[in-house]
Image 1 (cartoon, rainbow, N blue to C red):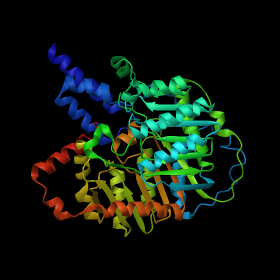
Image 2 (cartoon, helix red, strand yellow):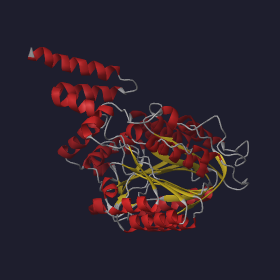
Image 3 (tube, rainbow, N blue to C red):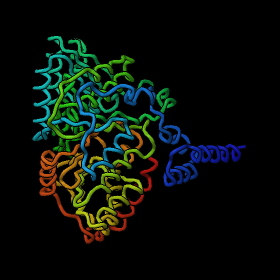
Image 4 (cartoon, helix red, strand yellow):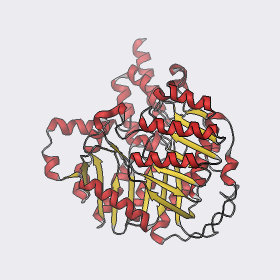
Length: 469
């Protein structure tokens, strides 16, 4: 009887793994081997982590309302996009439904503290509403600055809405500052609430998180980048500090797209539909660059995020520069990055030398040898934890936002990015990337060859486990 139950568990779960839609073969094999090796533990882990079923969301709610224009009179009917940039914007539109819009301006903030100071200044100048969404909000100096600004705004009659991830900001939610905002009239919501852990597991993976960082003020100002609401010293993981982020402050129609992304999340969290805010008229803006919000998450079509990265890689004609803290690619994205270097594109990628996730750091290094063989220049940043997620193409086009180049951002997290085509702002991003490179160590094949057998074995094992975790 025990043997029959044992075989039924293995067979039943293996069939379930094979029948799950949109799972790449490597992931299927990894899960089946894991279940066979540890049948009961494997069964429990698969039910907890093997299937992405984010709780409390509807595909129809998450997508933009395509029946209405984004904002009346805000954009010319035809937006001029250079030929080499068209594939990137096209794939972006296929992912979250937002068309590229013109008439935008942007400014790269100097550092994490400057970003918080700029956000606080904009909150203090707000006259209608302030919308904030952060994966992590800490009760440190910068976190309290934003809390105080939100309290001031709410007290003078500005509508303030805040979303934080229930896991990423769990300590903040339990603290006095969360309550203080609520007492002042700030409307508060928790994304992907955990609640009773046993019940939550039945609804879907606990680690499907809202990783977005969105700031929208008065419908025309928005921020996009990698920074959470915290000090660069990042007290919860201080030994990796400083956390090095990049954020751009945008003005123009692009704010309406980030607005709609925020309001879709607000609808999921609170069941309050405020999406009409994103369709209010705004003045015609003749000058400015083309930009597009690309919101990704488990509700998108399979491989949406890797397709975005790969498309941008293939669109490069001269130069491709990437910074990312977490690199656990699928086969297609790894191949696209290698192909970029092999076809003569100056291809550079910068990682942190010390990663706050030893698992991801090890998995990332398993890909170094292949990248180096293809001609990719690899740097490891030594000035802290490089947390900036940026990709620049030919010094003209940039993708910046919250998405990492790893399986979690591909399959599990809700992310937001902005793709824009503007030489001036992209050059500012490039100078920032060059600053990172100046504080980095160049990695070559001799460095990789010097790794011990045990070290290489650990890295490769972690890479194999990537599709599982």
